[in-house]
Image (cartoon, rainbow, N blue to C red; front, side, top):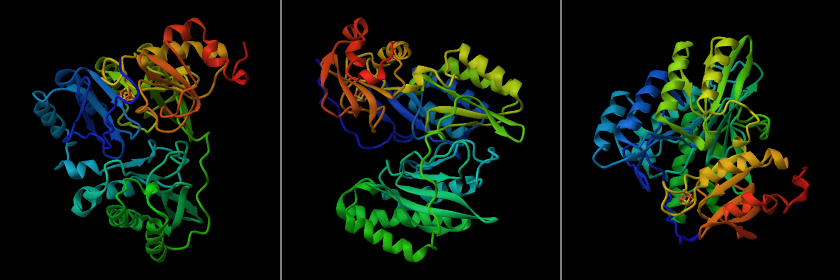
Length: 435
Ligand code: SF4
């Protein structure tokens, strides 16, 4: 039996040059540039997943793509293929710190404040080219948010760079993450934004090396104060903070009307998992309809600008027919589930199969909250809290309401017991049941 403590906290993220060992082989993470792949690049990567791995492809919450089941023997061939696409960094240290997330519809969305791709590109370039930044922890991340229909305001990042309208101009608000949320430090021009973000990164390295911390929010008050005072004297006054996170500005699924006669599609993969054939078919149909770019997102949803409503609908129909999520009220969207067994050796539970079975129950009980199915207390699929958590321990699930996989469960059941009497889950909070 595998208990909840039987996991290894790795504390770093895999890359292409520094893959991570998992239960089903090596995980090789490919970081796109400006969150963008062409359909042709995705077709090559889909084929590579089968040729060099086990055909499983993950969309990650950092808007990257992972190829699973790679072996030591097949890794060099995969590296050659990724290098031919121009997606292999020069070294593992630079690759590890290139953690820049931008809006998935940047440059496409008429509602955005500013096309922030040049800032994202410059920031990524500085991170890989300045060796002094390679001391950043691999989980340390930057968000560069130009606003629009897919705002990144709800996501957490160590450093935040946000475009704001300032009359006819654009100001860039710069902030960092504290335990209480984002603290805004000041503003700068678009041309200076990447340099300002890098300076926060360098200041973090200085403080974190003394305090032995990995994330901005974990620094002491004194450590944060030293970064704050250095940056406040460097940045201009921020007259108004960027708007707070708005839950309606978040993952969008299906056909998205962007205005000005423009459309995009949002297509999610259940639990972020695609198979080689699914991805091949999707990018083939996108290419037929003239899609030139596919954007990755932190919601494990692929986005693409489409030429018309009709072509968007055709792409969505094809994706839905192949098991992908195109309906914004699909209950699978409520559920995060880690890979579980057999891919991970820390559990014997089929977390994703159980997640699918649970999804079928949610509408019946009118449960519209977030759900996290985790094979163990490590909670790989979701670090934040969910309204309902099923956390594996010794082949059974503990039930946590409004917490994380690391919280102490109130009740334990086998999934068979839960399926036989779903009230074991939903009766705990009568307010969420309406049958
Ligand atoms: S949370 Fe899931 S994937 Fe992560 S270690 Fe536990 S069982 Fe494995």
